[in-house]
Image (tube, rainbow over all chains, first blue to last red; front, side, top):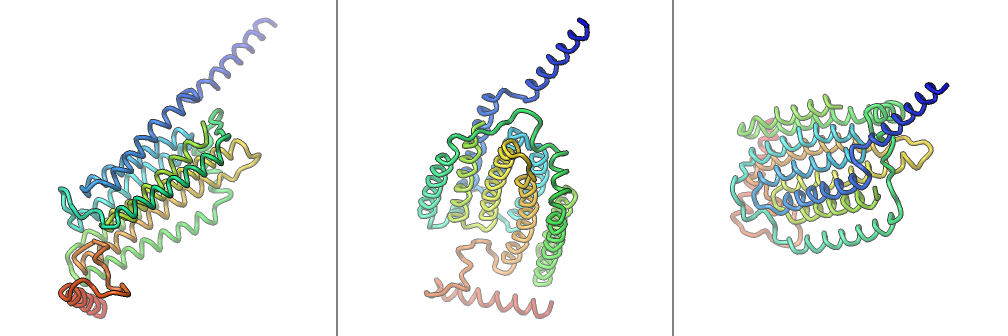
Length: 216
Length: 132
């Protein structure tokens, strides 16, 4: 009886240890990591919208989107994080860089990156940020996310909910992606008939569509 | 984790994107800012889905499903948007949205030269469309 009890306590100890060791970080550690990565993400986003070097804006966008992927991981939404890395960092930013190159963006500083209504835009953005942050903090002051236990967004959970409850929107989305593919080809072809200048735009667009559909 | 952290971060990112959309002149930079706004919404969706999946009895994981849909639609949007920007660049020679004022109402365009230039490019574009 005693060995069985000992085994039982040992098993219990291992399960509790496993439950405790499930999170990579302690709860406070998760908060600190979230805060630090959030600061990096916000800073990269600020540089993206303020830098005068167009290519640098796209590269800082990579940092912001990657930081968001890390935030998804910290929120235990693993599948979303990897989809974010695949689609955003993998294809959307590459497509944006293609667009910058094809419109012959200057490599160095371009002094006319910002328009004249910059201060109005800054006022609007700061006012919106103040209002949103005030409302959000006031509304969710006493709300906590429980990050212990099984991850809320593992591939199994996400796949099950996606293919049980969300099948019809998923199929509609595939039709939308097909429409976007055809639309990109049509837009590029008409322009190619006008001037035969920028032929690579059509392969770029279709490649990204294929990437997206492959990742789905 | 406090729910206010992701919510505040998403609000700040959204307003950063808002500033970019309003203040930038290059159309591709505007598209980047739109991507930032969409990502802020995605972070909100994921955070509230994780919160609800612990507090609610039964959840559809609607936040994560909608996040996946948003990511796919954003990819489609960026493809179409870049195709449009490239078509405009080929016709007009610029992707500066402050100079695309053909449908402006209320006041005259800046100069006669640019106006005739724009109308000439428009005529060639229409001709190309007619021949295509």
